Each structure stands twice: as C-alpha cells, then as structure tokens.
Image (cartoon, rainbow, N blue to C red; front, top):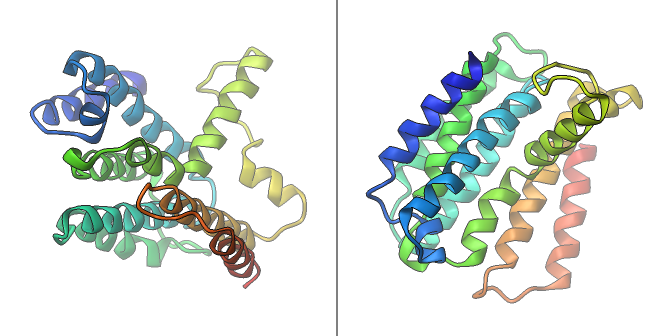
Length: 229
C-alpha cells in the first residue's frame, strides 16, 4: 500500500515538472521521456531514504534543514534571486525541529519524512536549469549522502538475508553507532557534521570553484568539531 502511494506521489511530482526546465533535462539534453524515469527514481529514493534515516530524535529533520539550506544557497548563487521556496521549507521544518530534538516531544512518522523528501525533490528540481552541469546533478545527491548511503546498505543487507525490503531492522548506521556506546545526541551531531561536510565538498566540485585541499581540511576539522560539541 505504501509503495502504491509513493508511486502516486512520484507520478504527480514528475507530471508537475514535465513543463519545467529541470537540471537533469538540460544537462542530458535528451527527450523528456528519458528524464521521467530518472526523476521517478530520485523521488522514490528520497521518500524511502528520509524514512529510513528517521530513527533518532531530530535526525531526519536536521538533515533536511541542512540539505535545503545548501540547495537554497546554490539557487541564489546561480539565479541571483531569493530562494523563496527553500526559505519557506527551512522555516517550516525548523518549526517542527525545535520540538523534535532529543528528547523529542513530537515525532514526524512516515508522513513527515515523506514531506521532507518531497521538499528536497522540489528544491533540487528547481535549481536553474539553463546553468545545469554535472555537479548541479551531483550536489543534491551528496547533500543527502547519509540517508542515501544508509538506504543502499539496508537494501544490500536485506537482499543478502533474503528478507523483504520493507522489513525493519536495527542495523542502520545510527543503530550501529549507538551499539558502540556513542550517546544519542552525539550520533545525531555526527550525522549533521558529515552532511555539512558533504555539502561543502560538493560545492568545491563546481567548475567555477577551485578545489582547495586547505578548504577540504578545514571542512573536515569543522565536521569533527561539530560532532564533538
């Protein structure tokens, strides 16, 4: 039932962007019929990865805020106009986040994680299409690198165990860190820090930005500092 609902969401979103110059279509310069499956895969990935990473208080909401902030910055840099959608989305999630931090007073559930996935999809597809490059496509993927990696590992793990992909378990990345004795708030901050680092790293990969090992080192230092606060 959930898979059918997710496909309906994906269909509506792909249809909504069918008349819009998206980064994917402009970069590939192919028929929209080749772009639609990629967009479908991207929204389905976001819906499920944000759901799977929602295992600790404030984790999915925090990652959503960080990723949307980064995408809004890219939008502003490429279009020189205010990212109204991104700002509204960040504010909406933050209003929930302050009550969802550890120890949480409210929880998002699957509908909340799906909402964040939808907002991330819209923000990534709203990046100025005319200036689309390979890195414009990669940047949103790296921004949600933690949920994406955790989902890929979960699919591999469940396939290897020959269990249903929809069967829950307690072997996600955050569960493994908790079993190592790391406290709940520190695990969440570690994932925040890694997400920030991935955003900074992807920004350095843009053609107009000269890659600097010093900046990369400073980013890693900042990531570790945030994680240990």
